Length: 99
Image 1 (tube, rainbow, N blue to C red):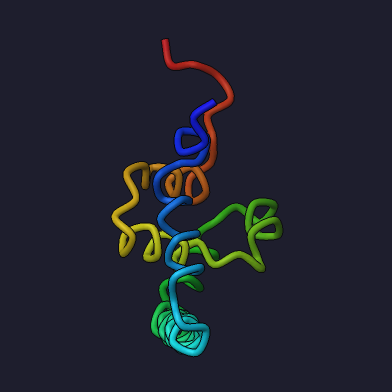
Image 2 (image 1 turned 180 degrees about the vertical axis):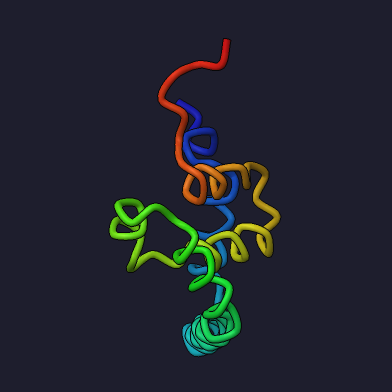
């Protein structure tokens, strides 16, 4: 079995980075990412509140502790290919097909 093909390339790259990096440097990079994310949380607070205010009360109750706007921004920053997943969170999932 070819062990390299078992892992997704992104996972393999992450493992190689962790194994091949200085622990102090890696800790600093991770801490910087935490601070950057916290800053984004503060910047997006108003937009997130507006989104939740526009939701149906039952949906809002389910997503009260979730930061959908931050999730959307992080996916965008990572250039994630399927950002339509955010629309499913914002607007719901259709329960029947559109004929």
